[in-house]
Image 1: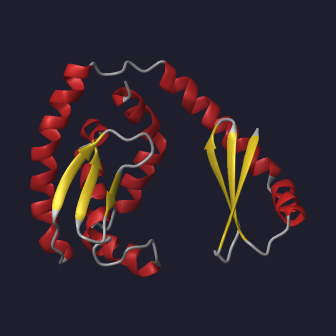
Image 2 (image 1 turned 180 degrees about the vertical axis):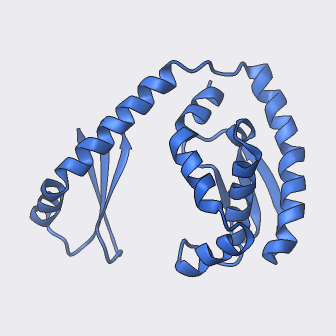
Length: 184
């Protein structure tokens, strides 16, 4: 297991499992290596279980058939139209405007929203249930109101999509497989 430590102006320490062999610790500048090691030791069982989950996901992803370049290109073309219609539908419900939409083939993100209102969506979402795609659109549009994941942000998501947790869970449970299908 490789542990990367990133220190910044943040106030709290976090542990992030990157994949089956990499753990990232984010910590404030003031936190010592000893304190970080104590936190890692305290959370060893949790870390081990998450690393095992990552190994299992990676094994599953290896057995997935990836889309051909042609299939991926056709999927991305369809995605442009689908996401545009979804954004046009949900933007007024959220109460925001948007600038542009880009479809990407990313390895770790489902979507993103810039402060200028540019929306990016992962082509892999086209292989998910439509409600999951809707959830990601609503999630990114809500970032036009709150550029963070605060309680206020989640309240806005829930206002538009009360069952969003179910779709978020679906992505956590099935997302790696979806992304593996579109990686070339």
